[in-house]
Image (cartoon, rainbow, N blue to C red):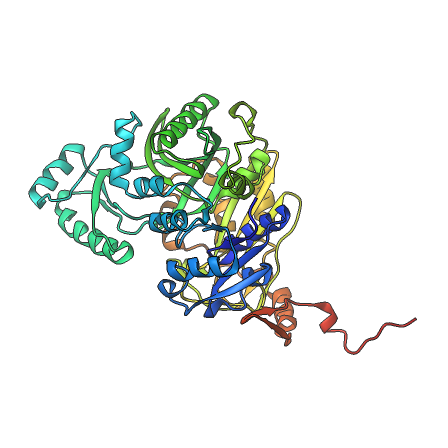
Length: 499
């Protein structure tokens, strides 16, 4: 096993990885930018090292600095989490070249699957069902327009090198094609330094279904069933669950085998996610592979009953899979919501600032993967995700009840968040009925708006915020700041032990 793992990330996913490393007895090295000196992941790790200024290119995307710190501090493995360098084939290749284990797939698989056009070609050659589409490199507008008309409007323009909704445009008529192409290319160039885009048939009301896969270095590959991730804003997921209400056991087995075939076609190992668009009645199409740990992995852990980060580490250390496909069983139902520092009523505009008070929800079947605390300031430099709230129960209806109750007992003061919005989503009759399609938010919560309602936690949270504002000493360790969260001993005044 590894002597030390460097966590090349921040926030809730870095904290999540550190917890598993602690359980496995593996020391951890956190890295941080100047603005993250007092972040929770810095406080949780065994060691912490400064990367540089807040801009990602100077900190969490600085491959040279991260590799130098790994060598200097004796880390023999790096876990990239998700985002930042997690799907960067050059980073994985650098780890391979310098003898540091990259806890993820090989660089060759990341490079192949990171290009949506190349991965589509590979999958089509392997007989994997893909949506009709075409690459437009070197094509002029008239030819693009003719081929788009052949596959039929609406069509979807997508960035070949990216994800997360960047560089995507829905085109419903030929008159809008040129303007949409320009916009997609411009956004793709800005986000990924690559303006290559391609066009595929747009499915009007699909479901976003993904399959978690695990593979070892000996050629063994299994799937851990599906997650439904259809509820999205700006093409990014905000609610995920498993099992899907749309998938029968027969379709699950078929899609799961297709996911395994995708992994084999790309030479994949470690954890990954094969994403599909499900059009109903057993019709599904390959979308992409996320070559990393997914944000929504906790719902799979709840229902399957394992620690995916631990499995990642064991596979990276050269151990064979401990699981067989016939031993994978789904138990109960799990739902996750992503808590963002955003204002849903303002079209999900990011909301930076100081968290005056936060009370984490608890209860049976409740898990909270969190990267923040009361008194911490949410910066503007990074993705605004704060935490993930997950509920498990024997049935879907019970899981909805548990998660809704947890959201209603989750005050966060000082910034705008998606907590109340997500509770409204879970309480919507169409969500309860399982009618979750990719246009759910646009159809039922246009612009993120919900009926105005005063938070039921206001008075309690306001009182608690005053307590949280009490000055708490900070401990400086190696340049990082370890800031204590609220401690009742700080409020009782002078005291001493008596015999």
